[in-house]
Image (cartoon, rainbow, N blue to C red; front, side, top):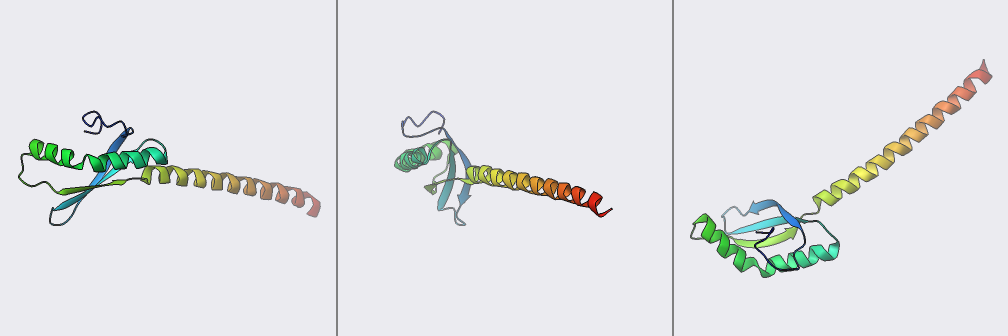
Length: 115
């Protein structure tokens, strides 16, 4: 539905990453990853919340069930956090490599002077 059935221009390119159902099946939290800025995330979340009744009716029709859980939407930022963590770990590895190289160079210059 996110790819074309919801014609709201506020919805940025996005996809569903996870759906968590409550134990009784009365409610579901839908996590959506949005490709875009924080403002696009906010507008997408607002648009999905506005379209909640339409989405529930479509799910009811497609699934052929009598009861569809109440839907709530949340932005999934795990992909952005993973990218940031990878960036920070890469910086740390570079810094450690430079430190090890400078320590090896210092040790190499000290060794001939002691001999």
